[in-house]
Image (cartoon, rainbow, N blue to C red; front, side):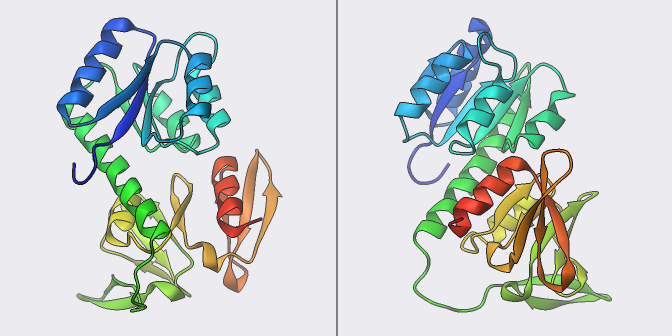
Length: 243
């Protein structure tokens, strides 16, 4: 990892698993600021400590489970879910987790999760301190056997489908990216916002927000286009827009 070491918190009720994860995080250059074995204590600590870059959170814990802890944090701390059950991956992304780790932990997957966290931290720093120049941000999309450049200012959002990222700029354009993480890493100063596990949005393109079935929200964009946002994604969008 580059720059300042990442400060993380580990919440895991199995002591052996917790100690192994802490050792792996130390080995990866992280500072483990705190360790917890149950949910309510984790949440209380985080409400009083705001200098945390990430929370590694077991989805099944005493008192408060991981999902409840995540919802209570409302996106304030990036979360990596840890679980022994692959089916919980869907729950993790529905709750806007940055990534998930399956037990027993593998070093390669931990490194991948840390790269995602580092990319998110870098993007947040770029948004907080925007560049002094105003050159337009552009990216490539497929055009026959070649490519053309598209201005980000003309793009409303990006959507990933079957490991292909599509850009929406008056039309549906196939990019050269295969994940939204790659988009965030390529456009760190763009201020893009993840409103759904499949959708990365340019907040300036938003025209309106309305409730939709299933605790979701519909985000209205130009040209009568609407995209679906999760409850957590909508809350972050409202905060970004000052609503």
